[in-house]
Image (cartoon, rainbow, N blue to C red; front, side):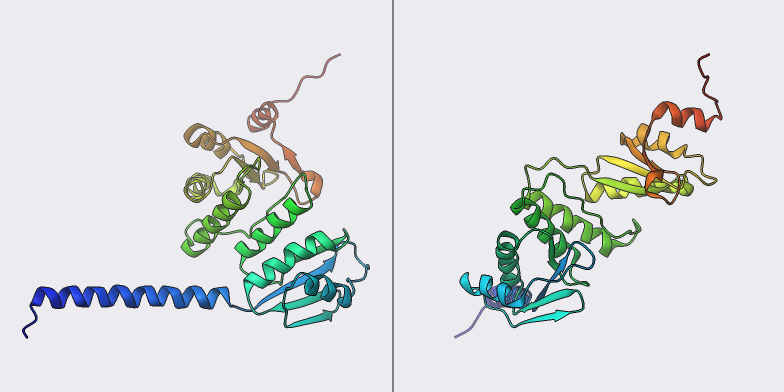
Length: 252
């Protein structure tokens, strides 16, 4: 029997597609069964971690298997065979443990998984406000920008009805480079405003005008120092006066 070249090519393509699908399935299986660790710590410094037996009781009552429960310093670590088990355990513990504990992925975990946990906890506790503070990143670091895309997708999926403010923090000393940064961040997330920092130094902050004019992004807050009170709401009149060294007239 003679097999035509066309049939051979089709068979080869089908085999390649099959191998590709098998590789995707294996990768998904490996990720879903990747070991995961939850860390439970008290909110208030000096408070004790929850009793390991009570945690075991809550998990066992809900049919959630785990590998170990280990107290370490001021943290209770719970190891699981997979992220699926870890997520299910977190949902149970968010409901059953008393308030005053933070239940999160262990340090070094995937930032997107941490955001997922935070959103789940906020929903279960009916929190009014959830602040997601991501690590600083340069706009030209592709892997970190992709990570930001993933975080944005998770929030969109897990809490689509939430009112969101997505603010990007820009260094006021970088001048026109801040405009390029803002534009790149707008490509990966639904940016709603800017926080402009370091305006207490040599920066004049005129880039705020360019960002508003070219990108339509409002400046929501400005940083004028290192203390907590130095993060202030942006006031356009005060900003323009400071930009041109205009002194306010006092009544009298």
